[in-house]
Image 1 (cartoon, one colour):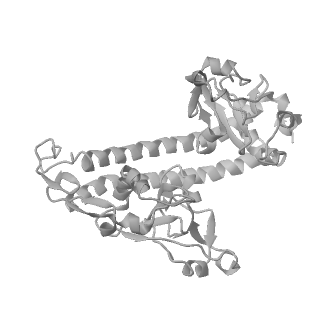
Image 2: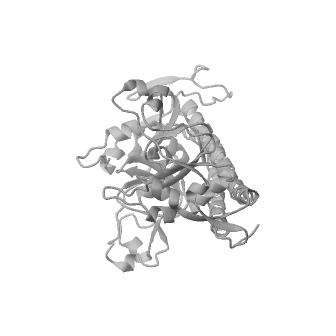
Image 3: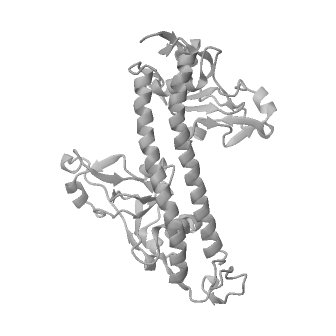
Length: 414
């Protein structure tokens, strides 16, 4: 590789660990010092992080060996698990689950971020330990990597890869805004009952007629039923994992709650595992149509997604086929609003689970068809756009990952 050299990670910057202030001392927590743990990165989809779930105080920072890391430090989790990577967008501290690198003057921080992603598998393989794998500071410092000798070349690589992540993050922000619009509209129309009346004015504020029901005061013409009255509710199962006929070369998406745990938007485009047509026919869910709304019913209760493709599901779901007046985009918001009630109907000793029987009987306020149609006419296009942006981000991710490998291996020269 032209003008690339083999060096150790310690040659790129200072490798710094972290620590945890005593959790028994309340004065160490709740301050202004951002403090990051591996858990904070477990569902983190961006590159730049400014804070974690908890802050610590200056006293907390001084009480332990944690260090205040400067902006643009590349954070790398060294245990539980090894390999989460992020960039600090401001001064932060971390717990002992990190071996972060503060880049020196000869290292471009964006390049370093992508370099650690590229070498993640190598670093993971060097972890040791019986309870869980961990990479020590000494090991991290001595890991050998190839890098361009010229910092300008590093910056070019970082800029190319970063431009793709910029677009992905822009799409994610847009999806968040679109979702917030859908949530706000649902709350305004179906919780506050301020949907537009015939004159375009907020229904309840404009004196719209309300009637008493077992669910309280509701707009005239709306009905009370159960969730089981308005959607088709189905469950799933798993094909015999010992039978290769059900799995080998399968092309049909097979969904488990794990597939929903990492979604950035509530749109399921594909699944980690696939089954054959024989596998599909061997389970209770068979093929569920595109547009099916999925709710994880255990481990944990509450993951939600609309499948954009026909899908089969395992036993960890309640699936809802919305083929009546209630649409999947309406029901998605209803489930979010009523998740506390859903979780309250779950039971179990090993883990909490809500059965289809307990789910079907949850009270459901059925709006008038006219209001539902108007809501759907506004919100369905929002979720169509979310789906489009999500697909685009997946495609860009694939391009980025391919380029990452080729650029970091020197296969492509800039």
